[in-house]
Image (cartoon, rainbow, N blue to C red; front, side, top):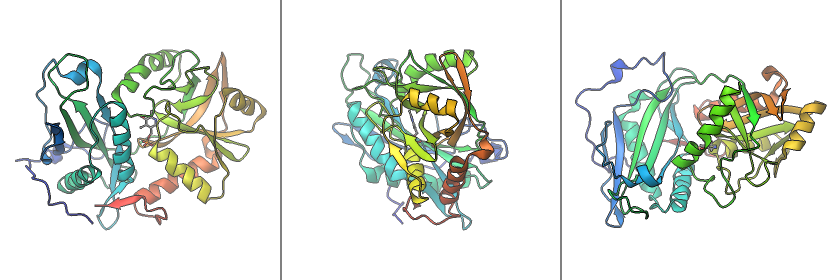
Length: 354
Ligand SMILES: *Cc1c(COP(=O)(O)O)cnc(C)c1O
């Protein structure tokens, strides 16, 4: 338990919660009443505060709009049966936020400001945390440069904001993915490991081409040779071949997913052999051909597990076994949900109770 009475809170005069249809939530379109804000100037973070969620007034010269000093995070809160607010591994997000900040020449945010602000915001907006099965409150921290200056240099001022959005049960429709062998999401020495806004911009055009060709997402390969898998869309990628769990190691071009880390740990707990090592396209296509590719999925906060139904590579579609037959990924999905909602034991102390 932490003291959440630290920061000033300006509450809304009238909550918008009555307008929110919790049985029909669309991802990322409805926002809770409040947001947590802290600004950086004069070489330090200023007074953190909780204020009504609302628009910002920004200069057209805002440096983050021009040069992309902008990063974000994503995590989720739920409630257990007793009504306690539970957040899944928020300290991991606070640490990753700072790893991203260092790469983008932005100031690190003390972990206690992140944690206190988050706890306080969730307490104020606790009624916005859905209790329907599979639903949760998606939490979006974002940090961006705020200098009104179009010279190319790191900004002297920044804003850090946390706002939240109630989200429904994510329908895990198995995805058709295409192995990308021309475009790259991230290169060695680049910022692929950072949750930087610009990484998403770089991925949109190749993803759109894949959509036009009838695929839901791309399987990104390494920027040097396009021989090794990196990520699946905006999620980490995990394969099961012959009962073994294979996933690329988190290099500087791969984002260190909290879901990835958690599901690999659960798989190890359950006695699976987990290999974090370069996984080549050749190896996976060979396994798909000889029937040893049992499962493939993306791992990330939004969906937890996104089953891969089909992999397209150089003109051929390789269909994977039906989702019902996938022992590990189905068990992981359920196991993660049970831990996140407090229904199962939490042996790794992942759940933070506000
Ligand atoms: C956020 C993200 C992930 C998944 O990270 P989680 O912490 O599991 O949500 C994976 N890849 C990319 C590129 C991401 O931005």
